[in-house]
Length: 378
Image (tube, rainbow, N blue to C red; front, side, top):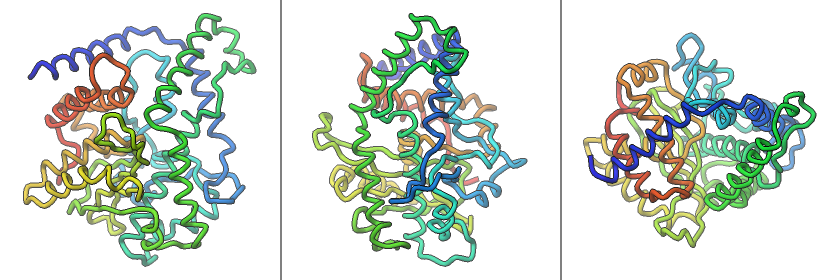
């Protein structure tokens, strides 16, 4: 191990140990989870112009989840758990044992639009071309991320102690002041790294597509986006979707829009695709990424290609789903803790507030990721 790796690894180990020693504040935890649930409740359908209440929509079809589930469960990201863990003892789990009914779910669309927009994904006998299918899947994945950002990071929503709850009386003035300061600082840091305005701009791109045509096809998406997709040749045990911008310029002066990343199962469930939907404005900034991915994909040995896409998905995703067999394998081989460290290190790199450079966190994550596999042919 080189000096850079050892330095970051010590930082990560110290952070985890401090979280394990942290005293839980159950009342701030309740306040934070209530804040999340309050912002989530009453969400309206994200279809442009629709004012109906959104239902709990799946990003990954339930028919697919049933295929990979064991006893009707998978291991999936639990956003409420992650939100509440800020004021709890220990590091939050990346994925948790979850019924498929609740896996990768957020209030996204009303019942009508959830059915009408995604027939190409959900209905087995509905014929559509592959590119349109992938674009619709990526659209729904983006709306999942947009909804999460609206619930947790929307700058127009002010944090507060919920004085209507009985537990608020047990939160000291000192804890209240610290909570409000930390939340204001967190919102500021997040907005500097990923502007919520850019999320709105990207959503407007999709809104324009659906306002122009009720059932858009691949050509319609191409007005605003470029689709890149790569056949894995198998159905993995790890799936994820998320959004992230990339800039080769360390000053990020061009402020590119986020691209959308996902592993998407083919409807036949015989294979899956790694996909990136790139806004036209971001094609130049993503050029080096695509060239690197395609160079590795062209090789007969796809191991480096798979490692690159694992890295991007962990960096981008707030929506991870894995099979029980993969989860148990990671736990058995003491690799799950490594996965947590990779994920947290990438989060620290995005925050860019530590003495350790962001690039060192990212180098550490990629090096550690080389020691285990998330995506491979069984």
